[in-house]
Amino acid sequence: MDLEASNRDKIIVIGCSEDDIHGTTVKYALVSNHEVHVVSRIPLFKSYIKSVLASCAKEKTTLVLVYEEMKMLLEFLLILQSIESNGEEKNTWNSPGFKIIVLRNCDTTSKVNPLAESEVALQQILRFISMKLGATYAVVSTAKSFADPTGAVELVANVANQEKDAKLQVYNTHGIELCNEVMLHQLVPKDWDNWSKIGLLSRSIPRDSNGTMLESESEFMSLDDLFHSSFQSQESTESLLQFFSQHGLPRKITTRNDHHENLLTYADMIQQLKALE
Image (cartoon, rainbow, N blue to C red; front, side):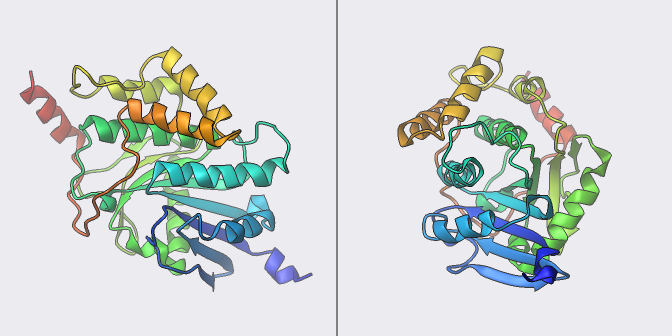
């Protein structure tokens, strides 16, 4: 047994996409005694992901899940569930044992308006999933460097430093530099969130009269039931995706642009809200 290898921390970056967001091959490197894997195109590399996860010491492993497509994020969670359950049906996704960071990369869209229902709906759903996984949720921009193994190590270390405050953090328009030009705009630490806080988002923005968002306890209970059952069959996963779609979430981010439009500050948001009165 390679004792040196067993003592290394592992970082596994998963681009939750069918496309080659982070390259067409798996990237692997040893960086500062960290073993780093960067993978996208989940369907193509499913066997590789399973083998790496199965060999990990959970307490020494950080998973960085980069949101691109909800279907692919759920596909990865299905892989994680299969590793955890060893084929048995049991509830394992609440505490999978790994440290997990769920990243929302704002560079994946040409326009980011945090007041838009679709953006708030996405934040609600990603925060819900993060809560179920016991994960940290972060919104970043100019984040190309985390696809690089060295950048991934810096990102994980700096997120850990930022969440020591153990409370919600939202930064100014430009954010703060997290590492290597990656800008951090929002951080929800592990164990900070709850349904009430997530539901509050839907009551803090101007709403389309036909819009449906997560705000009532019954809606969260329905989502919770669907989430737990979504790992039992393809039909259940489709039901969960349909629920997300009904609550304002597009199936896939379709516009990619290297130019980032800055997130609004709270002051900017308040000004926009007042203009609607």
